[in-house]
Image 1 (cartoon, one colour):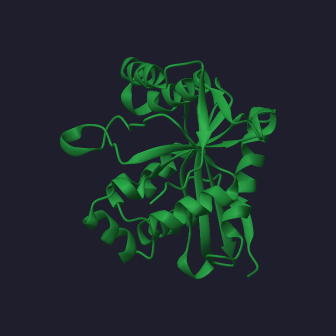
Image 2: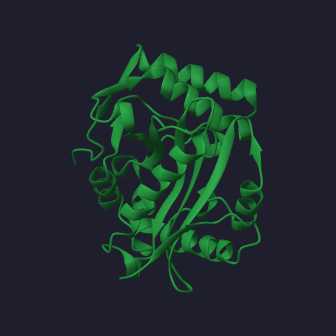
Length: 239
């Protein structure tokens, strides 16, 4: 399947609405997504050392896949908010091409190779039957997703991860793990510095939690890590 990848730079680009529709079509929890109207604002905004990027894979006017991600400039790392491919385009290399283009975009924006890319992903062992059913309704499977990230080179951080808000009663989301793609100098490493993890999340969280809350949650993660490094383990949990 032929396709082209491009970076969306114009906040008024019509593809942003199609990106919003793609998210809703392939992701089971709409409340966890970044709406298209906010993506428009994000592309036009740089704050707290965070730059936002949107890449799309297209076949003419058809949107086959997209990646929304962020450069945390003070840390020199990336964080992925979304990487998804339309059902009809899965297995055609779109995800891998978007991942490669994402790394190239981050490296270019930073002016040197980034340390890697973080992404939080649900753990199928911590999903309720209702949540698993919601995954299947949109043609998604959390086990397959984990295997796809492993095939791209992602590893799981061996530390308990909590997204600070968005869970029951406004509390943390606890059914996800944090994955990492080691890039450049960290490629092939079995562990990464705890400072890299905590500083990335603090910078990423600053924009929506504020500096004080972001620092507190990053400090809590650092304490859970319990050392100067965090091990990287297989992202596909044993069933």
